Image (cartoon, rainbow, N blue to C red; front, side):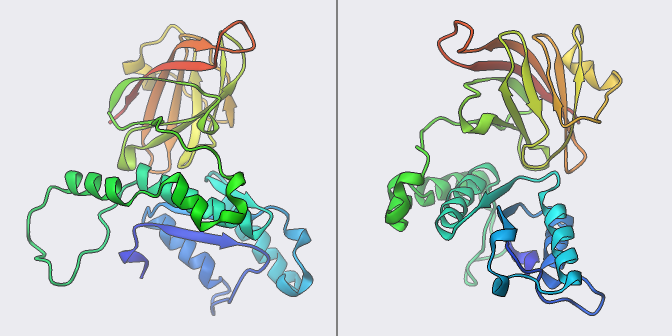
Length: 281
């Protein structure tokens, strides 16, 4: 059934689940298959599994080991949202699905009576669908009126540029410090945080990013992959003029060159990062 799915949602708590004859759980097999088929995955993991009641947790040492191993696999190199209660889980699921549809729009299902060979403008169809089906802040609050105050404020700012090469400027204190470049298998969720007014921290924690490297200035963005790239660290701290190389889960690469940095703790009126970028073939 996963072959017909546009997205895959995993909710992982205190139990590993039913185990197949080969010793691997069916849920873990589903997760592995979704990874293999490059289906966008949204994982929601309980934050403190040790606090789950005994009756809702694994009872055997083997079950606990399998759950710990699976949990580590899910959390390693992927974007995961953690929760401590059901209300937080509801909020995380609602906002993540909305975000995933925006960043990874899919064709969806086709009604049985629609012609299968009919040529359609997929881009316009997706854009029209998102315009008419994207959930609003009010609709989210109406779903969970008892936890409406927990929802972050939704703004019209777009933290994404699907172009292959361009420039972006954004306030990195917003959107969890993330700015997405590219589209499809060439998607790169870059992630940043404050360092100084001449440097910034870059992380490989964005969804689908598996490694990053820093190339010190001077270096040309177009030729950056010709330089030695050390992908051994989770975090790099580039200076203005440096380049960060991003590698995603599809084995593709992108480069971002730091053009300017603003830091609101050092006389600037707000935090701001400007980068030139290119997605390499």
